[in-house]
Image 1 (tube, rainbow, N blue to C red):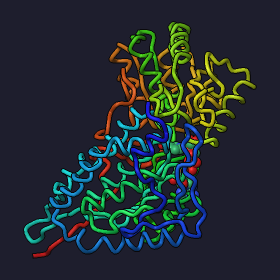
Image 2: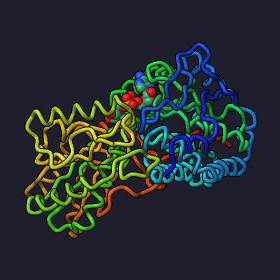
Image 3: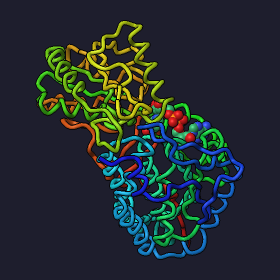
Image 4: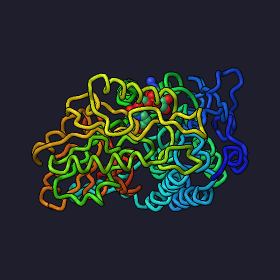
Length: 490
Ligand code: NAD
């Protein structure tokens, strides 16, 4: 068990600046962002709240960096540099993981996996730099036509707080691979690792200005980035409401967008499921990162014949979970902020007022050693109506809504009965039922007999209100290149 003081000693200096054109820019007169440890409420650092002018400077820097050494570099050299970023980050997993735990609250073991994933995006995409091939198109004997992939230009990355570093790298790794430059606006709750990453990137040898980090609030820095006419693509992960604002802003200058928004993902457990295998999977699907994952499996759609047995098992195991500070490596850490905690409390209290039965949890979790932290109990709301708020709205907390159903058809109907379409899971031993579900559920990713776990190489994104475009895997490169077609008349 590492104390906060020991963790801070191991980390060394925490950023108190942003990073533009290879320079540390400190707050000066700008109001600071207060960066707090969600496990204790302690103030970790103050960072500048970037302004419209800071965004303008960062975008101008990134635009200038599109020319010069970055553009002149041979593809294999660019690939080698991107690979080196991944290696450098892998070498610093322990330090970055401590920062992620203090900044976002996640258990240290999960933070390590998350930083490794962040590094792996660079490793995965690095080898693609010299394989971004075009095509040639037959136009007869007197013409030659070919296409080539060219960078889109300056890319803007607006990042949420739930998986801070890996959300940055899953956008910038493919963006750099395709030869673009980047301006990143991390979440105001969790800016630390992104600033540290930018310094590491320049140490590795990327030209100055290729990656810039503007810390700041969404309404000012985020909005200014989305509105900036020189930003040609915006990658955003966060809420549906903000995603719509960003798409409106991008429309004004016809920039493209990748939007990875929320979810209310169904997890079906059919009557023939292996409950020993399904139970830990259901728990991980909803409680990982304290339920603050867009693709969390938050609606448990259960066959009536196993409903009571499964809920009893889940409640018993949920009550036994250790909730605590991320540095103590608990089963579940705190929520990101008091604001998010109050949102979750609001959902639970309203559900209680509507008479919904909680099989476990439903209240603030008392963590004796960390009274200042933002802890909520692992919670199961039972017999939730498929149209209830708890089955429709994204809580973004450790709250599972259980919906019993009488048939596979009803399960699929209930699964598709929300505004979202991000992820979906099923446990069954009936391959036909599993495949029928996979083909009928409106979701960007489907997990059969094991929720999550597809890593950095499988495309990820949503249908409907869950977003537009795909990240991860080779599909994650699509947004970052434009096709230029050249026709030569002989
Ligand atoms: P948000 O969507 O408001 O913030 C996400 C990012 O967008 C942050 O960097 C923020 O500064 C920025 N932003 C906010 N307003 C902006 C604007 N007008 N223009 C440009 N950028 C802007 O999310 P939040 O307030 O931090 O969380 C609210 C809810 O969003 C959560 O309860 C959850 O439902 C959802 N959320 C989803 C994800 C996800 O992974 N899909 C992640 C975080 C939050």
